[in-house]
Image (cartoon, rainbow, N blue to C red; front, side):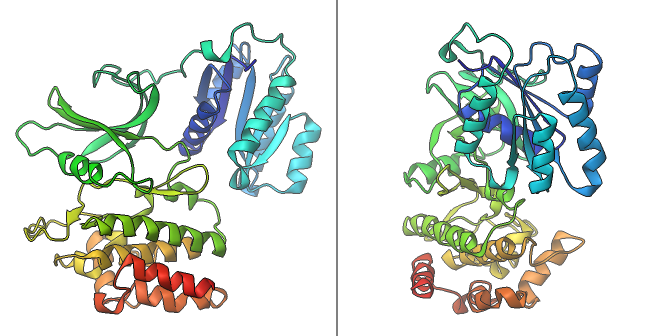
Amino acid sequence: MAPSRILIVADEAQVGRWLQHRIDTLSLAGRIELEDGATFAQRLAGAGLAGIDLLVGALDFSAAAAASTQAFLDQVLGAPGAPPLVVVADHGDESSAAAVMRQGATDYLPRHLLTPEQLATSLRSARNARREAPLQHRVSEALAPVLPQRLPRDLIPRYLLLDTLGESMRATVYLAHSAALNRHVALKVSRTVEDSEPQFAREFEAVGALRHPSVVDIYDYGIHDGREFIAMEYFPCGDLKARLQNPISEDECLEYLQRIAQALSVVHAQGLVHRDLKPPNIMLREAGEVVLIDFGIAKLLQDTASSTHTGVLRGSPYYMSPEQAQGEELDARSDLYSLGVIFYEMLTGAKPYLGPTAVAVLQQHVTGAVPQLQPMLARHQPLLDSMMAKDRNHRPESAHALLERLHCQAA
């Protein structure tokens, strides 16, 4: 039987939510609660750990955080009747793992190497180590995760909001449960619609025409009480932006590059340019597949009507092609430039162009030299030069052409 309550303690909200969503997909708990270090300290000073069946601590073992991490371990592992502790570690090593296990933790898991299988095995082992009696209710009868108090529970009919995944000027994306689909979904809700043109209609139509595993599934679209909404596939593994928080090997970089190019080839074959390709719009599945999302500004190649008004640019300045930065008509090669920027970021862990303003960054895309890789990565420079060429005629002519080049390099 699974424990009824798992408490995750994480000072980094993104890491905590990632663990919460990952554990939720494993169906190991009825209630999964998330607290930061300060809130957890208040719990210890009050009711303590009574009623908690399993504790998961996302801990930083760097020198700067060593004192606070050790204080957490001392408090938790020294508390009478404390539940089993599974440590998910950043910046640790073999010595920190050994010390934590000697102190009494049930398991120690390096976060950058963590897989769903390892997490599931660890939590099940911790469950078996509990000193409490087994649960009397089955997993199928488990309660839903604890809901944030301030979420508007009835914002969109048929959807129960569970968490906030992201926000922008245009919309908020929620983790929601659809009773009709019996699954979690990502529910994007506009701020307001009022008299303006609907924002998500283009995305709904564009993605609906694709229907491919490399493109996000769209389940529902509508307008309710002046708010436009679109329900789509939810990805508990997160996006490439989150993955970039941990080191990526050269082989992994090339694998991601190839998979993203394959996804773009599907999009381009349907006559679409994504126009907003960036790590947050590249989602990951369990087996490492990539899925493209956010087609809100995608455009048909044969659509001659310009959607770029004077002074208005759509997309992220860090990933815009030179022609996009200058408001020119775009083709598939613009997406390949954006992919080149992402390739550089995967290899180096940094963006190629930075600046104090968006305009300064865009100017570098237009006139700046292609950044040079470190000597140990120099063999990838010719590929990067071609993908990030200022003149689109010097880039691969299509995603298919890029894939052929990658295949030849690997042979």
